[in-house]
Amino acid sequence: MNITDVKLSYLIEYFLDFIPFLSVTLQYTLLAMAIGIVFGLLMAKGKLGKNRILKGFANGYTAVMRAIPSIVLLFLVYYGLPKIFMGAFAINLTRINKVYFVGITLGLFNIAIMSEIMKSSYLSVDRGQYEAAVSNGLTSSQAIIRIVLPQAFRISIPNVGNAIITLLKEGTLGYTIGLIDSMGRANQQNALTFQNHILEIYISLAALYWILTILLDRGFKAADSKLSYSSRAKERQTVKAGEISKEVAA
Image 1 (tube, rainbow, N blue to C red):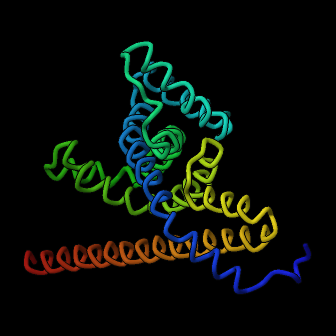
Image 2: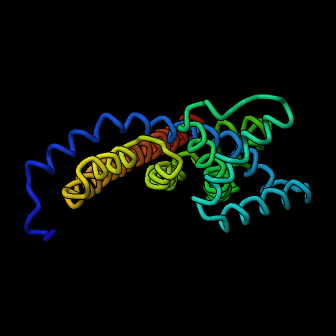
């Protein structure tokens, strides 16, 4: 089959057919993000803390996750978790939805990613702001929650967006365990048509992920710009209030 044989009508047909299966993609992405944020925060705290055991564990976990191919970890989770739960708790996991196995797998990777994002974002905030907040009467916890974390969150937005896009693409490996998301549906269509429309099918799939990635990228850029503008506005208000106070005092 030549590229010139690709028909627009088939491209549109398959593109529309794949869209409903994005709900599956959304499920494992949200699960992976929830796992990554919760445990990534704990890992980041361990990396930033003074406890050598926790710091060593957190850094070691990140190093291990970076070294394991996604598909290998997926097979370990998919085939390993049911055996562990059956042997230890007599719980049968073989019948649960495969989307959870993909979500857990991506979540394990995302813990390492989010811990690094949170760590670098936290360290990017000027230490002087924390010290100034404490010197003005705030407790250490209040200074971190009110001053440091909001700024760290804003700094992390572009990297979090990239992490989500990575999860979307890595999740397509779910077809190897029989998950029917957009990628799984594309393989089904390819089998049903005996590979006669293979180019139309995978060009449509590529276009779907391309559009989804662009929308996410623009969404996170818009959020980053809005939060940056709000932050600058608050800084201007603070400076103005300080100037007024000085004038009144004088």
